[in-house]
Amino acid sequence: MTKFEALGLKQSLLNAISDLGFESPSEVQEKAIPILLESETDLVALAQTGTGKTAAFGFPLIQKIDSDSRTTQGLILSPTRELCLQITNELTLYSKYEKGVNVVAIYGGASITDQARQIKRGAQIVVATPGRMKDMIGRGLVDISKIDYCVLDEADEMLNMGFMEDIKDILSNTPKEKSTWLFSATMPKEVAVIAKKFMHSPQEITVGTKNSGATTVQHEYYVVGGRDRYPALKRLADTNPDIFSVIFCRTKRDTQKVAEKLIEDGYNAGALHGDLSQNQRDLVMNSFRKKQIQMLVATDVAARGIDVDDITHVINYQLPDEIETYTHRSGRTGRAGKSGISMVIVTRSELRKIKAIENKIQQDFISKKIPTGMEICEIQLYHLANKIKDTKVNEEVDNYLPAINDVLQGIDREELIKKIVSVEFTRFFNYYNKTKDLNTSDSGDRSERGRSRDGDSRIPADGNVRYFINVGEKDGYDWMSLKDFLRDTVNLGKDDIFKVDVKDSFSFFNTDAAATEAILKTFTEFKVDGRFVNVEVSKNPGGGGGGGGSRGRRDRSRSGGGRDSRDNDRNKGRRRDRSASKGSPSSSSGKRRTKRKSDFF
Image 1 (tube, rainbow, N blue to C red):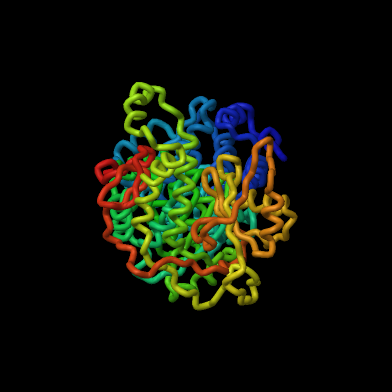
Image 2 (cartoon, rainbow, N blue to C red):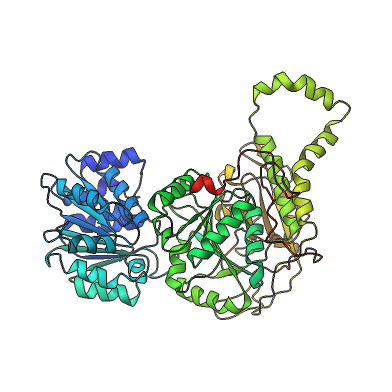
C-alpha cells in the first residue's frame, strides 16, 4: 500500500502525520494529494463522508501556501459551523511544524469583530460558512481577492442547504486564476452547475461509485405504525446495549422532543439543532465525543460537523426529504474503514422511499423486525453476565465482605448467581413481558433472502435457526468479519449466514435449519488462539434489531411477542444500567448515568 512518503509531502507535514498516528493514506488522499501537489489545477473529488477528505485537501493546501506572507491565500467553504471548526482544528494539527501558518475560522454565532481581528493579524487560510463569509465581505472585513486556492467542502450539502447564491457571490469576489478544489459526497446537478461556472477543465477523481453509499455500512429498515416510532427506537437501543449513535429527525422540534423523551426514560441522550447557542452545541458535542452521550438526536444541518469514527449506528427516526441527505446521514457511521449500521424506521406508506434510496446508493436494504421483548431480555441478560465477568474488582470491598457474607449466608453459588442476575433482568422482564409486537407487515413481502435487484422472491417465514456465540467486538469482530469467519470455518455458502448481530463480547447469527448440525458439530471443542469458542442455539429464534448480514437479504422470520398491552411512550421511569425507578428496567451500574437536561444546556 502506498505510504504518505510517496505522495510528495514535505518532511514537516510527514512529521505531523506521524504524530497523528496516520499510517497509510485513504483512497481519496492517495488519489488527490499527488494531483494537487504536482500542478495548479481545478479538481472535483467525489468521496463519501468519513473517507479522509479534509486531509486530502488540507495537506496540499498547507504545503503550497507561503507562510511568510500574511495575505489570505486559501479559502475553505463548509456548510456548518461545526464542520468549519472541525476543519480549522484539523488544519491546525496538520500545520503544527509550519512556522507562521495561521488558520482562522469564520462562522455565525460568534463575535464577528473578534473574527475580523484574527484575520487582520494575518490568516493565510480562512475556513468559513457561506453566510458569515458573505456578511464579512459585505462589511469589508475580509479580502479574498488575492487567494490562490478555494476549497468547496461538502459542496452538495451546502447547495442542499440553500447556499447557491451565497457561494456564487463569494466566488465572484475571488480571482479567476485561482485553483478551485470541490469535494462532495454526491454530484447532483446543482454541484455540476457550480463546477461548470467556476472551474476550468477540472480533473475528477471518484472513490467508489458516483453517488453510491459507503460499502462498510449495512442498511436496514423496520416497518412500524406511525405511533410506534418512539417505542421502536427504544427497543433498537435496548437491543444494542453498547450503542453509540446519531438519531436523525427532520425538524428541530422533533429533535428536541425525542431527545427529551430519551433523557426522561433514562438514556444518555442529547439534542443537536439550530436553536441551540454555539456554547450549548459545543457542550453537547464534547459530551458526545467523550461518549457521555450515547444517543445524539440531531437535525441534518446540525449533524454536518459530526466527525467521530466510532459511531456504531445511525438511526433514521424519520427519512429525509432528499435522497442525497440519506447518503450523508449513513456516512456518519462506517468511517475510517470500520463497519457500521444505518437503521430506518418507516411506516408502510414510506416503503417506496426505501426503493428509491436503494437505487440511488446502489445498495440493498435488509428488511428486519423490531425485536420482541423476550429477545431484548435475552440480549440484556448476556450483556449483564459479561459485564459482571469483566468488572475489575475494587479491593476496598474487602472491608465489607464479612458483613455481606453474613447477609448471604446459606445461599449456594447457583442460587446466588440467579439472584444477582435477577436484580437487573427482572426489570427488563417486567417491562417487556406483555408488550405488543410493534412490527407492521411489509406490504411488499420482501423477504431477507432471495431478492435480486430485479424483484422479490417469496421465502417461507419458518426454517431458520438463531445461534449465540461467545465472541464479539472485544475479540476484534464486526458484522462483516464475523460473518466471514463463520462462513469459512463451517464451509458454508456466501448467503448461508445472515442476521449477524455483534455485541460487545458475544454475538448472534442465523442459518437455515439444515445447517444446524454442521454448525454445532464444528464448534464442539473448537478453539481460536487457545480459547474455546462456543455456539449454542438461541432460545429466541427471531433476532430482530441491529445486526449484520449480507446486503440484499431479507428477514424471513416474524417476531413474536405478546399483544396484551402497548409500549407506553410516557413510561418515564425506565432505566438502563442505573438505579431502579418507577418499576422500569434499569441497572445499578454507574456506567450509563442518566444525563439530565441541566448537564447539556
